[in-house]
Image 1 (cartoon, rainbow, N blue to C red):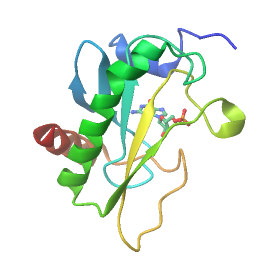
Image 2 (cartoon, protein in one colour):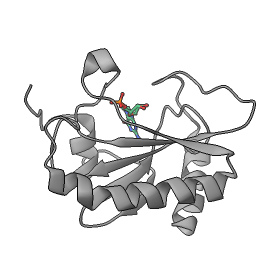
Image 3 (tube, rainbow, N blue to C red):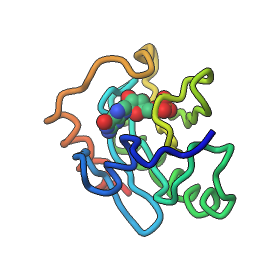
Length: 138
Ligand code: 5GP
């Protein structure tokens, strides 16, 4: 399997498509998932191109994981969620739909079932407010 540079996250990283940005540094972009499984669902996208975990350079993984932890803490603090899931899919049979490596941070609220993966689109104003709030907790 090869990397397709025309994937949607590559276009977002290049600024060709918009996103609700939480944070950007030299290594990665953090943005809100527009089809969230719960309120505050965020994505961490390393800038170095790889399809997923299977072809990623280990150096990319070690540079991004501290940010994944920071985002998990910031999402939990901003949303007051009871817990947080870290999810990452590799290849379509495993649930991957966008073929540029990314990590999901999905807040979990006690007694509230998660929505389906890639379900309904969230309200843009709500996503913009969440992005700002999570950024303030980073
Ligand atoms: P995967 O299944 O590849 O792990 O997850 C891709 C994620 O990207 C899904 O959760 C989906 O909701 C999200 N997604 C798909 N298209 C877009 C988009 O254009 N913008 C944003 N922000 N998220 C997207």
